[in-house]
Image (cartoon, rainbow, N blue to C red; front, side, top):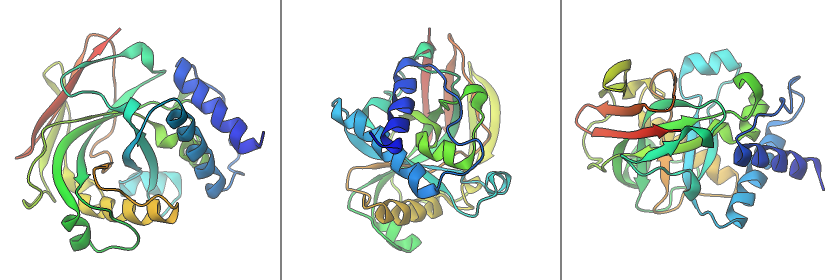
Length: 255
């Protein structure tokens, strides 16, 4: 078995068992291409168990995070059906290692979107837009990782919740939003925090996924990236996002 397959198995098993592992590349010697190969192999294991590919998620969509990680481009991860949490339902805390949650917006596509596209072309491919939450949960101990570590680990993506879908022909470039835990506002932000405009994240998703030979498909969901810092989640909480004009989405955290 190749090193890529070995590491993919390690990370996939860690996710399934909700048990952390040591960093695979603490010195940053692994290539980005190999890190994405590990990610792809790890997700393929999920597909072989019966899950379906349902979209992609974007990461490091804030300039501050890019600077912190020493990069000049976003990263991306793959979404599977097993990661989707029904809006308003309960997800067990024990399913994760050290989960956090980020407020985002999500797109659903009505046609394929691939390669170098303009913002107008990206918008024309969007069926609807919705408020969303992403549960991130690094498989590495202490949530500590290098760039290649996090790429291999599916960009920390572990779960996602999508609210009601809205007409994308409205201006969603700078909508105010709050993330709330048990009705208390814990983060305040704007959709403009996502690369200055969430459509730029979709454009990047089209470019990066096509380069990997996996163009964005009709019906796929694209999680545009965190609009505020993440918050830890614990059993007994109700976590929600409210986005100006787009509405709300939320989920309960069980044991």
